[in-house]
Image 1 (tube, helix red, strand yellow):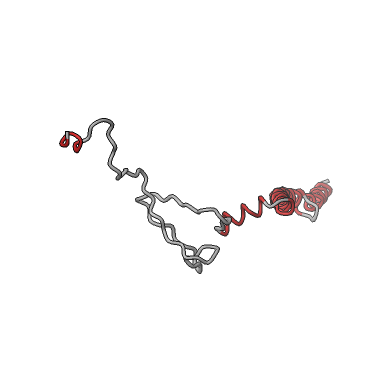
Image 2 (cartoon, rainbow, N blue to C red):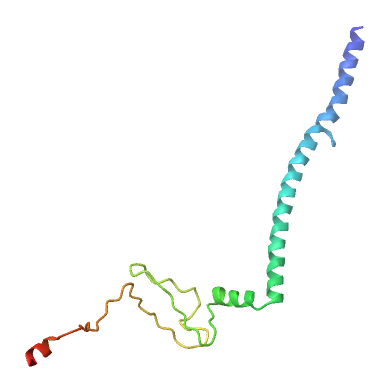
Length: 139
């Protein structure tokens, strides 16, 4: 009877081994489920990226507004007859120019920095209504 019990325990262990650590075992299934969840998240992120790119391609193909926006913001271009004005805080240093870029506009003309005065004070003397000092002296 003792021999039968030992044989049954050994057979039970042999049956359990593939269930837990074998090719299709529970541990491998759990590991594969984790990999699957990770891959599905990556696929969802890539689908979202592809949808954004497809929308951008459609905008670029269907109209000039998207092309114009990219030209303005990425290349710093302006239309003919437009004036580019950049407001800079008086205490802030000038923005650094990108490496390799020159100090020219898109039309090849040299651009000079413009000083912006936040609250300009009028230098024109005020006109007073009524009598002025010269009129009092003459009168």
